[in-house]
Length: 232
Image (tube, rainbow, N blue to C red; front, side, top):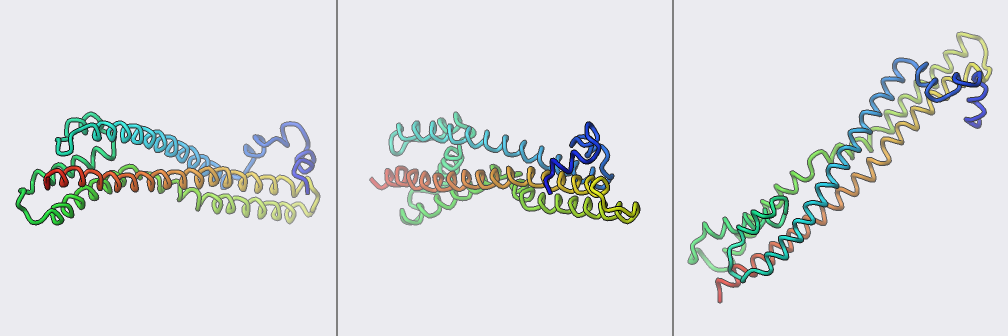
C-alpha cells in the first residue's frame, strides 16, 4: 500500500506528518530513534575526523618523502622528521634511525642489521596505524547493528498496529496506519544510520591499507639508502 495514501488517511494536516508521528510514537520507538540518531551523529563525526586526519598524514608523508630524498644517502633524517610530526613515514624513519644508532657497525652482517632495523620500523608503523584506526571500528559496528535496531523498531510498530486492531475491534486504515508508519520510520532511520557508516568504514580501511603499503615501501627505501651507504 502506498505510504503517502496511508499518511493522508490518518486525518490529514499535522496528524499525518512525520514529526507528528514521531511525537506520538511509543516510548520504545522514541528510544530506538534516539539511539539511531546518536549512532548516526557519532559515526559522521568519526568519519569526518578520520578522513581529515588521513588527508593531513598523506600531505605530510609526501612532504617528508620529498625532503628525505633530497638528503645524502647516509645523512641523518631526524631534523626533517621532527618538522613533519603527523607523517607516518617520519615516525618509521625515526624508529629506523634510533635502531641504527643502537647498532654498532660491526654488529653482524648487513643482512642482520637490515632485518633488525626493518622490524623496528614495522613496529613503529603498525603502532601509528593503530592510532590512526582509533574509532573506525565504530563505523563498522554501526553499519552492522543499525539495521537490526531499526528492524526492532519496525517489529514494535507492527505489533502496536495489531494491538490497536484488537483493542478497537476494527482493521480500518485509520487504526492500522499509525503503527505501520511508525514502523517504517524506524526502518528508514536504521538504514540512514547504517549506509553512510558502511561506506565510511570501507573508505577508512582502504586509506589505512594504502598508508600501510606505502610505509612498507618507504622502509625498504630508507634501509637501502642508509645501510647501502654504510656498505660503500
